[in-house]
Image (cartoon, rainbow, N blue to C red):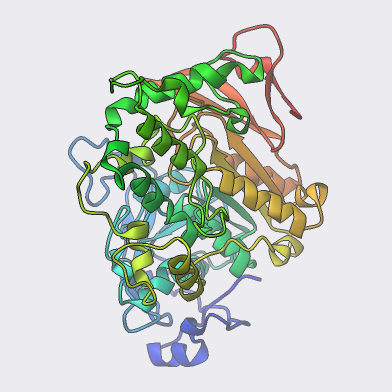
Length: 521
């Protein structure tokens, strides 16, 4: 069901008709159509809890995004209507959104919601650019936060901001965006898609789980939907390398470690190509690169090797031995946002906030340290509204929704074992692998780091693979990914629907996807 808002003469009248903050209203009335249909006239729209801050026609040509540096190349865009709005579902809320609308004759008739990264705090202009270039009406949100990157301190003492970031901002971005599009085009979008990676992957699964009517097709990349447990990984890695100062090793050793891992596990798939096809088969032992008595640039000490083994193992409950969250797989060492984060502070430095600040949202956590037994249970109970790790997507499935999941096998920030685990639990919940594949498929990408980068092919269009599934019922069996060096493509490889993987046919270049087939391992 497409959610619509009443466009009323006053905010009070609209708010009376529909209380956004409740997130439970249905039967929305069709918004009134604009008198003149111009972009600028959208500024006169009155929507519940929403202020249109700008609405301006943007001519075709180079577009310089706010905050872009002089070295950032300005993309050339077609003409579009650019609308900005602020949504306040609570007194503490300040959710910014932007929606870009192509002219009616250039619109593909479809709506595209897009995700953000980390703590958000900014509009993702690259996501908007990519959407408008494909003819979508495209929308993005800053998720209502006041910090950026991996700084989650915005939520300390601000429970409404926590809920905005966790699910409310993405939902409201969607329904307000659709209302604006309805008013501008005098019709509803034909279909609605969502795509995002990392926090954007979390947003994607949140929409499928909590608001299954919002989108017809969803792409969730490297999803951070098991959020609370995920945010303990950084603390675990830091403790592994810092509790004993002799366990610490400099980040300069990571290339050496990565080289040793690839040398040990590259050929396990029968092909020497510099990639670990499935790291679950790689049982690299850090003790194999121990120096002996002396430390060195090309080896580890015994204590450093033990610390590395703990990082591969991942957080565990010290009392029960239960796995709290998977560790990163061997082969992830050289990619950013993993071990390098733990090693960025030297021995003797003050411990960073557990969970990058997310744990600090919980009033039940007293600090300064973090107990992976009692503290974790208390934090999980208090902040359970943030996670969307529940694999029951029956409502999304039953209304015909399609989901494409993907993850880099060498993602060090959100270890990919959790994405595989989520998908396998989804299969159990939805009646088995065959039934699940009718609406949800997973694609695992060898060598790829967090959402991009790494040794393997990592440039692809998952949305393009999803659209024929939604529109024609053609389920994706594979898509083609490209690796580039210095901006020049040098390898292509099929990315196969899990559990299949790309197997070399035995002849032709190993850098050409045509010489591989998707097979069951």
